[in-house]
Image (cartoon, rainbow, N blue to C red; front, side):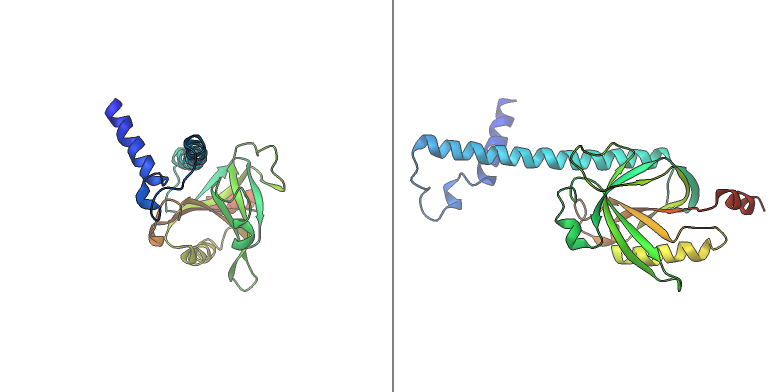
Length: 217
């Protein structure tokens, strides 16, 4: 155990820049105590970043558990989803990325379907699922408990537009909302290959009674 800790400490020492090879020449000439205080502060910042990353991944795992419990797959099906929430991050990627919650929660993207059937991005948010929002969060949006056409999709973000348009065409007999939602499950934070990205698509059904009648026919 002691040896393992020493190895980890050595790796940390190299990663945070204590080894002299990361400096040009000798380490900076600081009094010993100040030098170690600076090193401690750097370690604390690294620890905070690691804890934040752990929190992000834990929330992703929790959402994966939710999808598994709902038996969501790449085949589209109707399912009643519980009340869900998200923090609105704006209408474009640049605005969203400047928000502190952009990296803390799975990203949810709203896609609007125009009269001519074209799909375009209409908003982004930090997806809370069924969890309560942070105390300091503003502009909380609520998706009520509702019947939705749901499925997972594996592919690049650009291909999501095509998949959503395909869902509208294939299920034209359903009274689907003109707004579809895609929640990032596997994204650029954990996967380099865009073709391996996974999103969960949710398209609300507007008239559940009409939907039930058509499904029975």
